[in-house]
Length: 97
Image 1 (tube, rainbow, N blue to C red):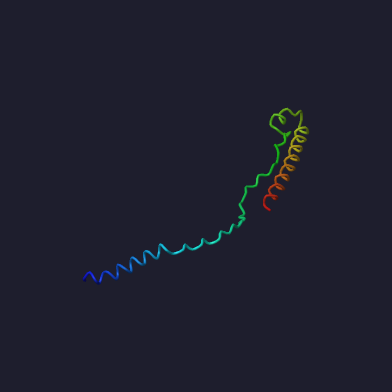
Image 2 (image 1 turned 135 degrees about the vertical axis):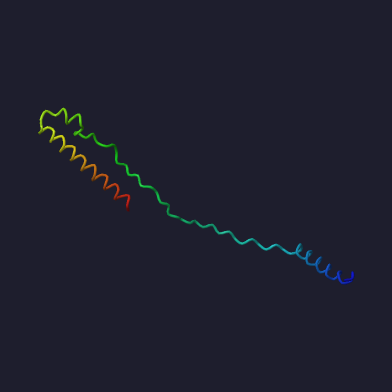
C-alpha cells in the first residue's frame, strides 16, 4: 500500500472521532420513584405472662395431712394447668392467622 491509500482512511477516522466529540449527549431517562411493599415474616411472640404458682408441688403434697388434702391440691393444680393451656392455645391460634 502506498501513502495515498492510507490518507482517505485516516481522514475518515479523524472525522468519525471528531464527530463523536461534537455530538450532543442524550438526555438521561427520567427517574421514577416507586414504593414497593414486600411482606416480611415476623416471628409471633405472644405475651402470656408468668406461669402461675401451682399448688401441687412436691413439698405441698408431702406436707398434706391426708389423702383428701392431696387430692384437693392435685385438682387445683389441674384446673390451673387447663386454664393455662387454654390461654396458650388461644395465643398460638392468634399467631396462626
